[in-house]
Image (cartoon, rainbow, N blue to C red; front, side, top):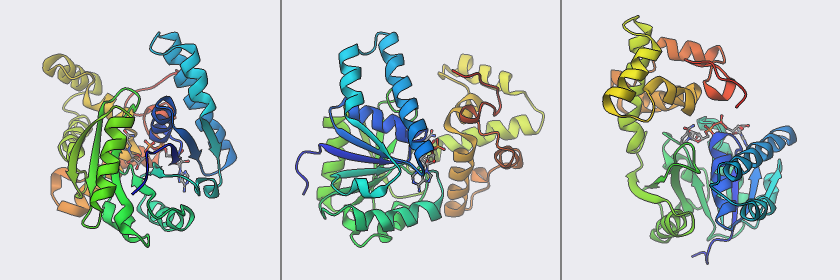
Length: 289
Ligand SMILES: NC(=O)c1ccc[n+]([C@@H]2O[C@H](COP(=O)([O-])OP(=O)(O)OC[C@H]3O[C@@H](n4cnc5c(N)ncnc54)[C@H](O)[C@@H]3O)[C@@H](O)[C@H]2O)c1
């Protein structure tokens, strides 16, 4: 199995991909971020640079560490640049067709058979992505939490085909290299955390949809009444309403329980492009920062 992981690839440079790339670069790893086109790759570079600069301004990191992390990052729109990677973390949009096709291609590109292909999917069966490759044993779920530089947890998801060596290397990467805490999760839609969290978020959407309470009251209730760091609708906006709806859909497809079914308001907001923080408007409106 792979020697110490030093060369990492991240596919998808959105909220999660940039966070994962940032923590990898900070941990001293040579990190290549791959996006759909050059403009998206450039936007990923800007997001990570802004996040690293923010950490310096807030005294969480010093200038020399930030500059060193930036030199370890490369941005591309060509998957071929992932050929020599020892670990690739897929963090593209929660779309089963896009992810499946990507795993098929990555498997051919990432030459070393010991290299690990990981997915950050929130809810899709990891085995489906594994079976799109010719070597399901090297595929594992590494489910990070948002924002990645801040949140300490990673769910490590084992499929029916994940090799024990892959699992061990993935756990060691998350804990020993990135300094995260891991929990083991089974390959079921939503894994552990989202299976509990998403019905709660959907209940808050239904509550506001029915006119029972407005977003501010719901969020304040949970924040001040239950000491949650943020209320469910602010959290849904942070996750991205498209992602929340996609997770709900996967959970519903898997378990057929009404509590997982995405409410009409959520689906309409996604269709309207009101995706939360990342588009500037969801249940709340957001400024530039
Ligand atoms: N948002 C969260 O809180 C959260 C938490 C944990 C896991 N996840 C999972 O992480 C993944 C990404 O979520 P996100 O919030 O970063 O989404 P996002 O919308 O912020 O970013 C997705 C990125 O993927 C890129 N992309 C799409 N297809 C691509 C391809 N074929 N090649 C390269 N890049 C491609 C898009 O251009 C976009 O920049 C999803 O699977 C999601 O379920 C999200």
